Every structure is written in structure tokens, then in C-alpha cells.
Image (tube, rainbow, N blue to C red; front, side, top):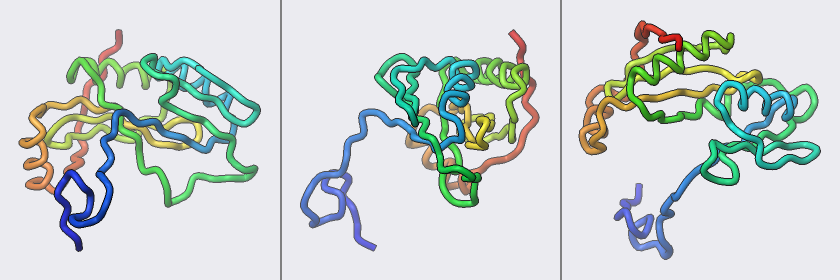
Length: 166
């Protein structure tokens, strides 16, 4: 396997490694309008653009963070593709517990609550079965977090997390 130097991608290969400024995710869904309403309600997102087969939503800092695109008729969630989309939150564990309570109040399917050794996560599904995670870091030093992930084999230990209801 080729070594990388962190600045030019594969050592000796022309070009530069990408410097990612931000990301977005695009999901195939059964009904983009119904899914958009769910994301507005559950995640507080705002619709920024729409077309006959798609809807774009934003968390409010950029034009879109999420694209919802109509899937082909009869499409079903499969075993390949998106495993989950992690949403790192601000506010720590209490904020995570409040979001967990909000999900439960809204009847959202919560898949699991976990301890990753570097933070806690609440995994949940949208109406089409796409999995998302609210994640609160408890170890904020990236070098230490990297060490812990390796040491603990990227853990996902199920925990009991007490939801907070606002």
C-alpha cells in the first residue's frame, strides 16, 4: 500500500490532498416533501430549495447540508450504502440527553445509545430508515481521541442514557 505524506496524497503522485471545508449528504428517499417536513420538525432544518424530485435543507449556515432526492419506485433500504451520518453537537452530554428526550417525544426510532470512549452517541432513523447519530465528544484533543479509538478498537458499547425532557 502506498504511503501518504498528508499534503500531496499518495507520495510521489501529482496533485494535492483535498482540504474539506464542509460536507453535505444526499439521501434517496420515497417522498422528498414528507422527508423534508420530518427533517424540519426533528432536526430544525430549513428548506432552502426544491424541485419536482428533490428538496435541499440547511442547518442555517450554508445553502444546503442535506439533499433529499426521490428514489425509484419500489426502492428499499439495503445492506449496502450509508451506515450512518454523524452530527456532532454542541453543549455536551446534557445537550445530548435533551436531544434524546426530543427524539423519544417525537416518536423517532432510536436505534441505540453508545459510548465510543471519546464521546457518547444516540443513533436514530429517519422515515426511510437512514441512520443518523447525535454525537457529543467527551475527549476533545484529536491526538488523544485517535489514540483511544485505536486502543479500544473504535468501540460502540451500548449504554443506558437517561433522556432529559425540556
